[in-house]
Image (cartoon, rainbow, N blue to C red; front, top):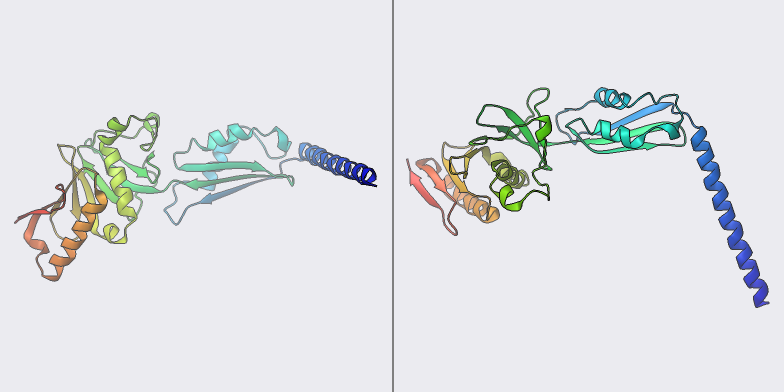
Length: 266
């Protein structure tokens, strides 16, 4: 009896596996015979200004060759993905084909975090992943600006990622753009700071100065160490002095020193 059950189990497993193999073969055969009948493009903008369009994606895709009315299994997916990634604002590109003949391209638009004005007067963005981006179709709204002694500039060949793990950590830490990027990331996560900070300035000593939207003070921030501590002190100092009407009497407010704020009056 036990032997018969064992034989029955083996037969059942063989039949199931055979059915699965037949199904995979059938799907593969159908896929090979399917013609591409439609291109579907989905761009996630995340409520930001639009710097990449479906038309631009289509043009980039068509540079790899014609795909509509072509066998779907003949489309070079890696080449298509690589072509779309050439657009500086295209991130997280995904290309798939479906059994019903639809070529689906989905991507996310890179989101500008801060606008840079370098010492030569050239301008570009840094996005939330630390990638340098060119200025396209005017100015992104509601962005912090950064300027001062910043020599780096954007070029197609210099579209590097500031957060790249392959970059030497000591060299990266002294990079003015990296400092601006890390500071802007911190500010962007805090509603008070987003409403408070107008401009980031890199001075001759490669130190950070912050220009607020309220008042004409210069906030000497120093380096990007202890950012949480520095901003905690700044918030407490701001709220304490605005209620007393004393915020505007200061010319500089220094957060460079640990556990203290050093101010100079006008």
